[in-house]
Image: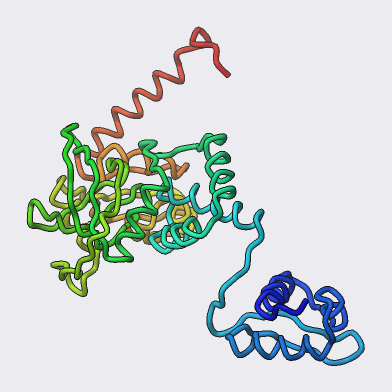
Length: 330
């Protein structure tokens, strides 16, 4: 193999497998001399790839963790698997899957060959996700278009459906995507309304980048924090709930079953804890999350949460005592 760039790529692909390669085996694989392999290893090191060499009769080369993330080579199956996984996570705003994941998906889909993009889309169409919360899902392409436009500082156009069903066309300068753990939001400057706005991404349709570049404006929060801007917007949209709930279970047990965004759980004993927090989430969502903790609990406030839980408990009791004459589904 006399084409040096192609040989380096093939060498890198071999080294990215989790094993140690003897120099003689690499030379045989690439049809070159061991001396050429040593020179190629030096070239990869110069490019920032941390290749470690071990001495001895069974010594060889392997790629190790370095101080920076070098470019990775993926085969077809690996690229499809990663793209499908990122799409699945991004489309449902899973906690821990944030804007960085969407940016990674945007970069990957930009360079995927058409045959692989078709495979990724076919796999996604053939699977049915198990949704949670209000069941709202997002086309991953919507996320990747928005993320690419925000990263590239490119103006966006899209259709938007408000909470009351009103449809409108928007022209915006996208600033950031923010995941709250249950939904994705876009923070953007609305050019027609000449003000900052937040948009629920599951209500965005047919977004496209216009090609017009823009200089980012200063977001009216400390340090330009988009998450803080979203929190303020949600607070203005609905009244806060001052939650006070006691749980009959250890604090670690409850923390593992409540979203971190809901607040800090403090232990009150070996087998009890308490949640005192302020939430701008809906009453129904908070009640559902409390019920899903799967332990005894008592709501001390606010009164409307106590009342809602009482009504919910009564409905569930009636449902469980309806007897065998129901739908017959199992």
